Amino acid sequence: MHLNGFVDVISKAFLDVVIQPGQQPDEREALHSMLDHFTPDDPQKYIITADRGYEFYDLLFHCELKNLGYVFRVKSPSFPKSILSYYASELPDDLEEFDVTIKRFFTDKATNIMKSQSDVYRYINPSKNTPHFYELLRKNHSHLYFLQFRVVKIKTAGISKTGNLFPPDSVQFRHFYRKRSGRRKPEKETGWQQQVSL
Image 1 (tube, rainbow, N blue to C red):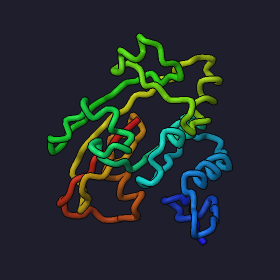
Image 2: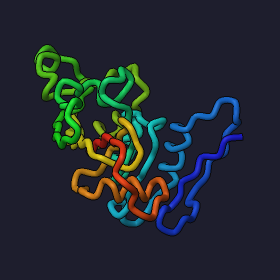
Image 3: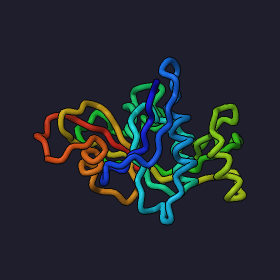
């Protein structure tokens, strides 16, 4: 058996759980299910946090659709399956710390102009499993959805080359990371953490 928990890190209370067979758990599908069940009065007061296994565009689009902030650990841009790999040429990953803003129109259209302007448009292939992206497009009556990414690499305690997706107005990255992992006291700055904000 595999337990997927939706936990309020302040109160430490379980808000939802999804139990799956241990042999083939689908954590992404479990998070989609818990997001569907989560209907707060003021969604902008909440920030969803998740580890690297949840690094998937459709989960980001699901949070966008529900007006929720989010923090996702993501793989380094040098990994081919990282969300950041598409933007690797724009990220100075060789620097010890950086803060880069990336702006994109996500689209389901692959016109010649859009293909030639990859610094403006990011094509989402209809064959990919991204139903929440298409729901966003329908909601906006458009073939474009604008997202602004803030990619930040900072020092943190004992972490090497990991990452997070953060809400665009957040500046307290270490605070979010410690809340997500349950750390209460500051630790010695020894490792690196790469963080991305949307």
